[in-house]
Image 1 (tube, rainbow, N blue to C red):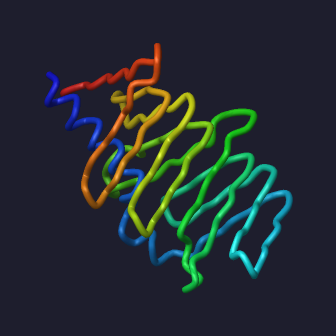
Image 2 (tube, rainbow, N blue to C red):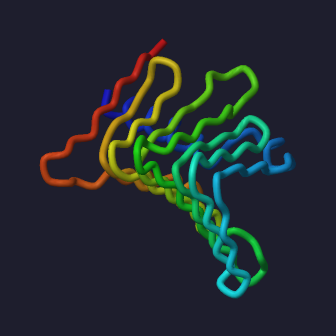
Length: 161
């Protein structure tokens, strides 16, 4: 059971970085109530009813900040759910059920292939789900770390069918 739990957790969390390959070729559409861009620092800040859509990959949040590296590629993207958790969902294969991730803070570092979900985290796909307060995932190393946080517990629900 422990091994199946780890496999499921990896399966769900790997989807955060692994949307359909065709999504990377799609145009990114970002909508928000307000937008600020600082060319010198490479920081974009989108606030108010933020939506991001790229193919089958979507994000909703109250605030989104992105930081560009010197090559003008995104090195950091942080989505904030201030009132309700930010929501990320995608389809990893056309015939698979969508994977949904909810957290008050979703941090994505594409260069290092790191994703961190913080505060009231819920990742679900179909009947399977994972809950916790903090999850670190690295797609290069294929590692998931759920650190002990006081009285907080990680909860995994796995349906073998």
